[in-house]
Length: 430
Image (cartoon, rainbow, N blue to C red):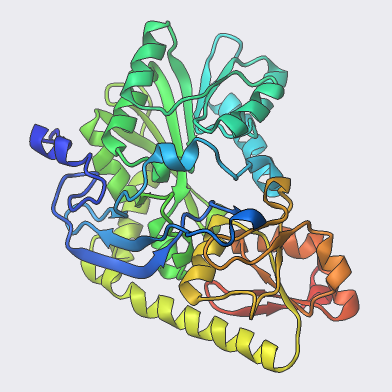
């Protein structure tokens, strides 16, 4: 069993610019990649603020050579980032469909019914929990961003506007709430105090309840050069290996794991209480072995990442400069967090990408942080008829390319920068 953190180490974990691992408390000295300085990736600017000073923070991913958790220093508190948030999950059709499939799978697998309780942490605009409502399964969302939570409440999804941790879990437990299913989709990365968060899940979980956590797999991030998924809002980047040690510290165990295609390659990890009756799937040991073979427990795997990142930058800049020299009109599609990391690290501004578009009206007529590229409605593409569309949320490349395949009518093409530069001809899409 993984020993508890010493009190002195636990106290140190609250330092913002940390030099100890937020998982195990070990001193951190190794760098995965240094992406320079960058603003917060969701801090979109209205035109009235373009002449103001803009805050930039170091964007340097470190790796613990004890537990192999990849992590950032906490330069900005979660309260500053997430109290009002620009990301609404429901604007991705494929992500909502993914959530609906998940709900049906969990309903059948865990035999959820009207006597169950499903809690989602970082429940956003109700994109997931809404699918339990028609079948009469009680739900509760926890979402710190009041503007996003308001949308969920309008959908009929009960939502607590707060940050989750031991404090809130104890309060919910005192109120008689025990969760048969706790869902955490792409939230663990956004938690600076991992041990407080996981301890809270332990408190809230019913005796035979199950926790599911989805997160991008660090093995895929490294293998596919997905450096743009590194940004200040994501404090940590996980393997199954790191989840195993984190869970064990809080008397939780991994009972199953699935590999998913979402976000460029993710894991869905199932956890239960240490003494629960849930059997352990053979997939757990199999994936742990796969991680060993991929070098996840070898520090050299992490130290070789920078050269791959630099190659992506060179190839993309070379392509965009050639487009500019040839008189081609280039725009972006999407204004995701990952896109802003890419634009800022590569130094791409309106000299190379005239504008970008997004389906989220919250971002319309604002400007990307740092590089100040204007964000317009998707219809701007039909008006401007660009020659090249740079797909910034490359994890949605298929969805976007098929939605916008009509750009081929005027000779338009898509380009995807990661894992390697690829040009997509719309008229060749099936």
